[in-house]
Length: 171
Image (cartoon, rainbow, N blue to C red; front, side, top):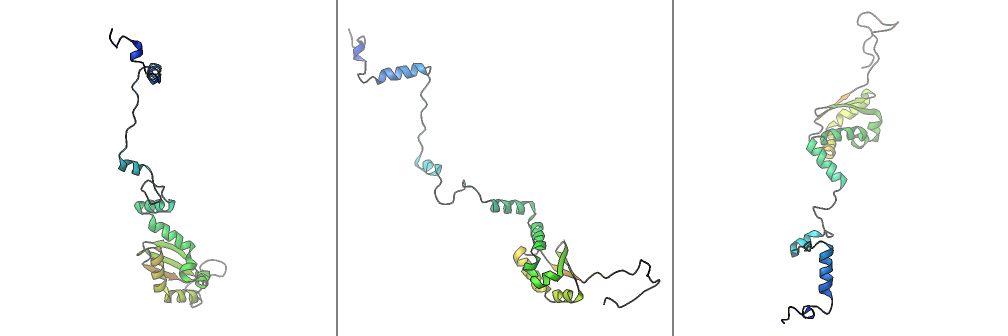
């Protein structure tokens, strides 16, 4: 008889062949999934190190800035922040007596509580425009229009005067 008919001739004394046959029978003789060997450069790319990596989480401020620029909202957000940061641009004393009213296409309209404060702000308007553009972005503000106080109207009421009425009261 040949060696193939003798069961002891193909038996592994460590028992791994039996374990392999039992495992193959248990899984329905499905092929054994093999792990794909990684190349050395792929293994290095699998883990992010301490340096910057494109897969790292992004800082919220950077992502928000990109969205604002892409949508064209950056200038509008800058102008809204100008209204809340007015004292930073003109100083505390001027900010207490003046207030930005509206912004339209590079023109910022500011209302002063007296003609004196309006004149003071007009004299320093080139410096204010330059400072605003340095902080908010170039070309955000092209011109300041400073208005004086709004005087009372004498057109209506019991004591209204027909015709031209009083003149040179709020010069």
